[in-house]
Structure formats: C-alpha cells, structure tokens
Image (cartoon, rainbow, N blue to C red; front, side, top):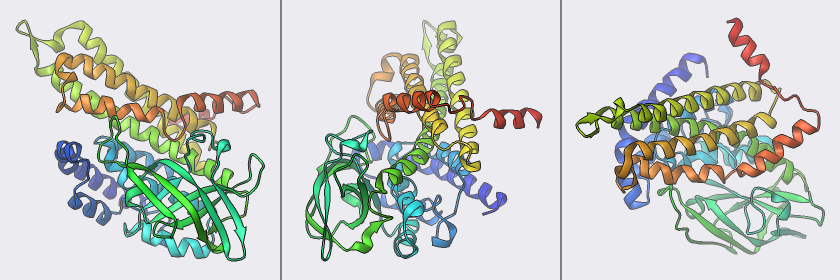
Length: 391
C-alpha cells in the first residue's frame, strides 16, 4: 500500500470513527454489544486485516501506519478496537510470525475479511503478564496433540472461531508451544461473559479445554517455540496499545476543552480559572509526549533497531499517561464527571484496563530495567529524533 492509499484509509477510518462510532457509544455501553452495521462497515474498509500481509487479504500496514490508525481508533470506545484488534494483533501475528505457509493461507484470509474471529488464548489464573506459570498441557498422541487446561480473560472468546492456544509440551520453563484450535472442536467450552469495570461491548470469558484433540498440522512453529512467539506478538501489541491510549487521551482532552469552554461556576466560564487551565495544560502535554513516543517507537520497530525495550516503554508511559488524563478530565467536569452517561466517566473506567493487559505496568518496568542492565542502549530512538531535527 503506497502512501496515498494509506492516507485515504486513514481519513476513511477517522471519519467513520468520529461520525458513526462516537455517535453509537451510549448504545454500545448500554447493550454491551457492537452494532452489526458498525461491524460490517469496519470489515468493508479493511479494519479486520489492516495489519496482516496483503498477500493474505490484509492491507499490510507498517507499525508506523498501525500507530496512526490506532490513534484514530482509540478516539472512541475501546470496544470498537477489540472487535478486530486480536485478529490484527496478538492472535493474527502468531500466524504471521511463526505460521507455516499452509497455515497462513488457510487462516489469515478468513481473519482479514472478518469471516473468522481469532483470539489469543494465553492468560490463565497463574499465568498472565508472565506466561512462565502456564499450566495448560498438550500431550503428543498418535493422532496429534491432546490439550487440557483453562484460560481466562480471553478477549472475544464468545465470538471466536479460532483460538491461538498456548500450552506446555514439556517441563522446562520455556517448553511452551502454540496451537490453532477451532472453537467448535469437541472439548472446547466457552464460559459466560465476564462482568467488567469498563470497556463494555468488548467481551472476555474463560475457555475450558478438556481432552481437545488437534492434529499435528495445528502446531504453529516447532515445539517449544511458543514462548518466543508470544513475546514477539505481545511486543507489537504493546506498541499498538500505546497508540490506542494516545487516541483516548486526545478524546479526553477534547471533552475537557469543550466542557471547560462552556460550563459556568458563579457566572464565570470555568476555563477562565487558572487551576482548570493547569489541568488542561498538563493533559495536553501528556498527550503530546505519548504521541511523540508512540510514533518514534513505531519507527524503531519498523527499522528493526528496537522491537523490545521501546514498545515496553511506550506501553508503560502511554497507559499510565491516559489514566492521568482521564482523572483530570473527571476533575474538570466536577460532579458531572462522576455521572453515568457522561463520556469522561466511561473513559475513566475504560482507561484503567490499559495498565493491566498485554503486560502490566510492573512487568513493563521489569522488562525495561533488565534491558538497560544487560547493556541495551538506553536511548533507542535517538536516531529518529536526530533525523526529525535535521529535517
């Protein structure tokens, strides 16, 4: 996809999000569902496969293009992104990074056009941000592999057609493999939808795997490669989440400006109060810093110079940043910001999850510190900033 094609896609996404999805946010919140009309349009404009290779029906976006699209998608309810996020991201990238040619041709076109929803089935009760505690097991048999275990908090579990299931195939800490499992395979059971604090319209649920038999052709990569495959998928996903946080921060700043420009206290526009101005200024600064970090990290991801430390740094900063911006937005709105039906109240709840999934803030700090102590350059994006300064 050339730059002009991408700009057309970006403008189409932006218009669709701001004119159609934003207008549907209250309905999505009350129904806990994404309208089918929105799902159809998202598929038509290529959102279900924009990060998947063009040869498999996707748009083949780079990480820099992903970040720009994610900032637009993040402007509205996170449920919209979740509808197609795992197919483009952590689930779909398992196949992109480690799948065989046969697996890619079989599954990626279905994911890209929205015919198949793929979920990333890694998390368990004792294995979340750190998968080393994984307990699900896959035992080799004459007919393939027999999988037993339980997954939790799996996004789109109730709607999924394909699961990327991570399971132990040995007793070592890294003896983890990944399998493509159809959700209609005997022995696969999806539990009821979880009741969450926020992000309504995006569903999660438990998945139970009881003597699930899959053929050897459903093993992705080699036995024991699953840990590395998961880490590669999560690293890219963390950059994507950082950009979504930036998009939400942009929306929160807009909501804050709008309210501060019109609401009155004692006959005076509250935006004239210096303390309200300070809250606005801090939020705009946070937003701009997150945006710059996400864009710089995407550049280093694309050129291969940093696909590990910088994504963790971006995810850490941006997920914490949007929490601060959401808190200030509620404060600017005062009592109104605490009421259901006001956008900033909903985003305040929605934003909290970003600091947890795809690696908690605490895990990101461990990753960053270990990279630095192991001799990794503490300034992986310096070349990007220099090039921009020179330009």
